Image (tube, rainbow, N blue to C red; front, top):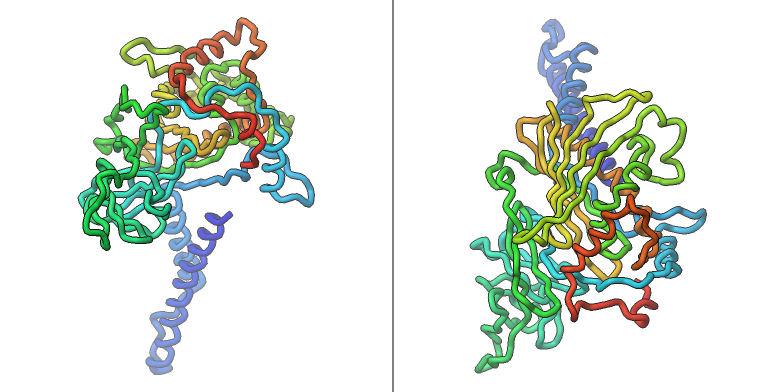
Length: 448
């Protein structure tokens, strides 16, 4: 809604400026020129219409060319509204009454997306939550990125709220203690003669790749055992950033990537036209039966040295009035790297190719932040990747409605056609270790 209002405001300003300039020009000409001299600024209705159309064209070009940003809150998607109740109330009610089931550990070991690189400018600090921990993410003037625990070990001030970047250090806003981002050691206490050797803060392994900042989580503080591959088309600028969506999902993290192996749900949940919307009560309306999606999918785990990866190959087709419409055929390869990162590359016969980076980051035990960032060939009009991202968003929000209301079943009742789900769970279990945190019954009663 806010983006629509901004667009309307932008359009109003453009039209207002054009009309004001036109009126001002006519007024000055009328005042300065003798009555016998024709007014060159007098506009005919046709010329005024031309100016308005030009302004509309410029505005439309600007709107379609800029990257799209669609950010959904934790309560915005996936719940059935009730009259007289706001969305936050409904979402909280569903969370409280839903049975959690016998859950796997809540935070798998691996790399997670923190934020996009372009959002982390030099000399700035961001406060983010990952795996139940508050972290301070900052970039120095030299471009180095550091991630440290957000809370100062002195008296608990949040370093990311009012803290400053000083060289490679972050300075506490409360007493001015400075901690180096590389090893976490305190290097300065303004009022102390000596800095204690034990004065330090936890640091998080991190690195930048493909226009994103990633952080490593391991419950046993083990160093990274694998890395995230470079997408050459992104780093070489062959594919350019065209926008992103962000959602919050109230479910266990494993539920989300498991969808890749749940082949049967594609031909049921995602068969109806994207025109039928995201509310599962109405997606199978007869109004949209003339347009359907079909999917051919295969999922498999990769072997060493890439056993932390898996791959889904997918062929998408569309049917109009029961006939195959080949112009909308898309070939997709979704390669998952670790527990929460997917490289979703797609290729179209004449609309080019690109990638959606699908990233799942645990915020709390049953709250995941999911982002989809799209990069596309720069010689393809921006409206194409914008449409692809919005279509992906529609299909994803259908899944969100299921995830937000379902129970996790550790021993599901599967038929032989569901065999890939069991394989996926065995593959995903490698990201848990003996000390991986679990959701206890006491925590289960908390209201998140």
